[in-house]
Amino acid sequence: MLEKIEETARYLSNLLPETPQSAIILGTGLGGLVNHIQERMEIPYQQIPNFPVSTVEGHSGKLIFGRLGNKNILAMQGRFHYYEGYSMKQVTFPVRVMKELGIQYLFVSNAAGGMNPNFQVGDLMVITDHINLFPEHPLRGKNDPRLGARFPNMSDAYSKELIQKALQIAQDNHIPLQQGVYVGTQGPTYETPAEYKYFRTIGGDAVGMSTVPEVIVARHSGMEVFAISVITDLGVEGIVETASHENVQKAASQVESRMTLIIKDLINQI
Ligand code: HPA
Image (cartoon, rainbow, N blue to C red):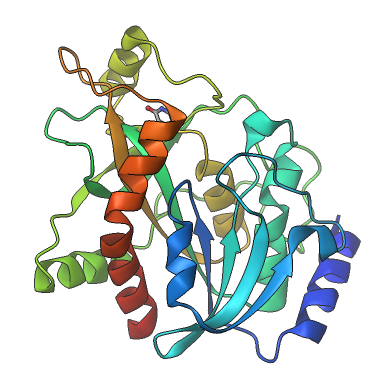
């Protein structure tokens, strides 16, 4: 695997004028952040050696290099989901390549269903921790110590420093910001009422079908992580705010500008 990672990183570093410090993975409906990236250079996934190609509606599938505020960044527009049929190694391959390129900070966004009764559709939730319910682990199999430790620590998967900075940015800009635990499931079905209740019972505030694999691999490889969810539907008992792909995309695009502001300011502060 290391050879493939190196081959892909070599291809990209020959194209990129500079190595950015931060990378962003953009989730469902949040692709509009790329409109804030200046002096853009776009590289479609099909062009990148060893990259899987994304298939879901609303995920256009390209790497974008450019400036966000005063920093260079690399953004992934379109991610690879486990439910699409990719293996966990494929889902997380781009994160390995980011690390190989020298990127130190990973920012992840996603759409998620809220289980916390204090949440509303359109809320932003900083992820403070996760519960991994995916049926396959991205680190399963022989561990290559050049990539990371066999038994990585997950007690501080989400950077406390970045969370504090994000809360401050939100406060300064009068943006309400929730915090909570993200439950990662395989999908592609949204949850039954009983499943939402179960995920709430085990300690979840929001549930979604991504992020956890990428975060695990980023931490395995020693990157700092910040992740944020847009609450696009609710799985709270007695409240019907149903999940459908259209509703999820609509709700996500409505809060895109607030999420963009937080991530942009955060990247500019590090
Ligand atoms: N469940 C799982 N994934 C999701 C949801 C949800 O309710 N909303 C957006 N992505």
